[in-house]
Length: 149
Image (cartoon, rainbow, N blue to C red; front, side, top):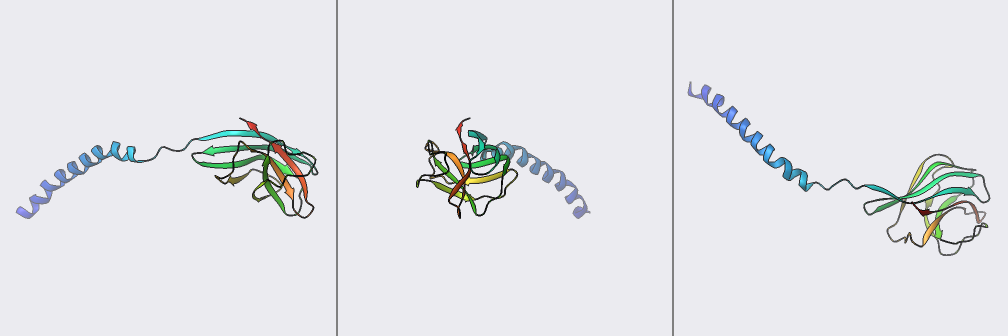
């Protein structure tokens, strides 16, 4: 009979101890979790044609220490081996680019929303224009000059 009553007495005490532990640990556990990083648009501009038809919006979004170039409603006439470059402010708009550019990747597609990671080493106070560059023809297809959002 003793073995039957022991679990009956231990169960409520065990449940109470677990509940007390969860209640007391709740705020401490929440405080240990980092706050969700907020996304902030820091630069924005409109994609404009240079040698190809192009349209859409470009923006640089910062989330914590991470920065991305976002293209929204993006369209460009297709071309071979197109790269996405960041170039310094004031770079010529006639299709040539300066030697001082940052390659952030191959164009992911000629239509739609896209994201490109911007390395932490890129100074966005200096590199404020996006150029869509056709490698085989050494030609700028389109560009977006970015301004503070």
